[in-house]
Amino acid sequence: MSQTEELIEALDSRVRRREERRAFFKVALGAAAVGAGAFAVATPAAAQAVTDNDILNFALNLEYLEAQFYSYAAFGTGIAANLQTGVTTSGPQGAVVIGTTNPARQVNFSGDPLVGQYAREIAADEIAHVAFLRTALAAAAVAQPAINISGDANGPFTAAAKAAGVDLTASGGVFDPYANPNNFLLGSFIFEDVGVTAYKGSAALLTSKVFLEAAAGILAVEAYHSSIVRTSLYARGMATPALQLVETTEKISAARDLLDGTPADDPVRGIGADDDQGIAPVTISGALLPASGTGSNIVPLNSNGLAYSRTAAQVLNIVYLNKAAVTMGGFFPAGVNGTIRTSAAN
Image (cartoon, rainbow, N blue to C red; front, side, top):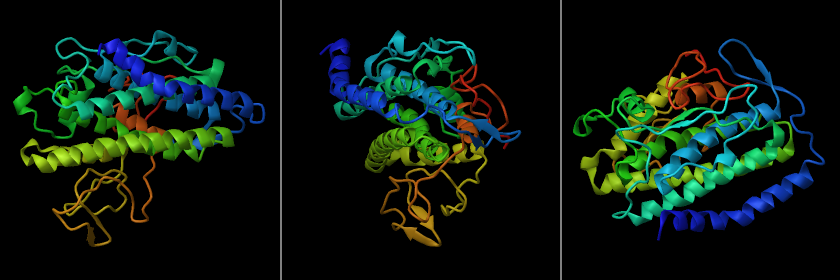
């Protein structure tokens, strides 16, 4: 089957759902005012009044990033040009930096067709999220900003891996998420948990019940994606401990904690005020659940069994790969587009 046929096959199953979403918004928006009201979003300097449109545009930036990464990894090409245009008053439309030595490209899943199926399904979902949010925002949708998904030595994936202390000796100091299925899953791990916490943290700020329901729907899908990635990494890590996959997720998790300003897990995996976890067993209130070495941590949650939340500013710390208050960097070399664009000062 050709790449084009694979893409069509994956997207066809989403077409009906996309049309249903569009019909839903045409009806629902008659009763719900777009961007009604304003709330405060945590920012480094002071509380910033934002509208529903601002929040959805922030989410759209994240979906642009995920859609481009998964589309290249699954199909070898980026998302359609007509899904990248939009309002440029808060930032220009940007290109996708794919790299040169280890460019963004289709991962060779021939020896691992199951992960290849996961990749194509997730890619189609993320593309559908972009289309859905653009429909919801209509003329207010921001254009895609500049996005860097390069697997090169100077790319953000390598920077993230180095910041996490991942051993890159065998790969010459480079982390290329397109090199093989295991690297692809680790690259996905960098994004997926962040997406879940971002939607959970932003959902409470939405004033429109229509948009709240939509955000809850996307959050659920992102959580499913996260579970697929975490389960796959755990199974592979347990089957072949030498790959250090479980340990690598712990390092990435700890790095995200340091970037977003929350304390990293203690040596015995106590959660505390942590808002991020790898896939190793977790200690909750002094009790190890499940027993060390015999269980997993597929679902990252607090002691009440609830998923974690992040503010928009904390999410930007992670995608900018910077714990300071900045407006660009990492996966967004020129920053995200929209009114919410500054990370927190951690």
